[in-house]
Length: 262
Image (cartoon, rainbow, N blue to C red):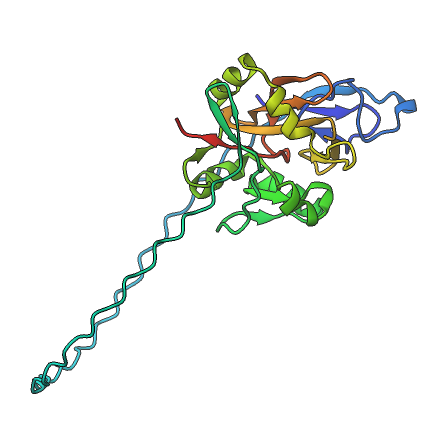
């Protein structure tokens, strides 16, 4: 049976994930509002009704087409030889970083123009996407300027759509990729995350649309689920220079970084 964490002092504060300090993140600390585990009754899905077939409308017979007249052939005009086509312009290579046997694209994904992917611009829209499990994205700090400069925050449900529109030759990492990354030197990966990071505070989006600071702990999705409610993500710590794998609510808003297919 699925579970939730409820605030002891405020029953409207409900969370899918236990906070690190076990206190309610929305109540003042002085209230000492603990989070308690509550089992949630999952409603049984309704069986959709089969629509009755509509009666067929009798087709009106179409008129027979007139036989077109065969045009008389025109005299052939001698062809002028075409000029040689210029060489095709090569695509600019995506900036990337090589770490061990892996090649990671430097830029985070900022893909938005996909059918079925919605922009959740405010708290209510992000909560609605949470309730419906809709593929959604938003801008870091709700600032559209960060889309081009840094990338977008996506919930985990958006990954299935993103995988169909990735830069050519790239893929979203799985757990094995992250394990291989942690066995190599992470300095190059972390150095990429550190560019301008201290001067620009960044926040990730939590499932209930609140924000968690991500300035020194940047979080990314993998493409692997961990049950019905959570998926595997990894956190890059700039100060500790380490990468940790975590199980996170699928409705959180995290970045996505891709690596080249071997």
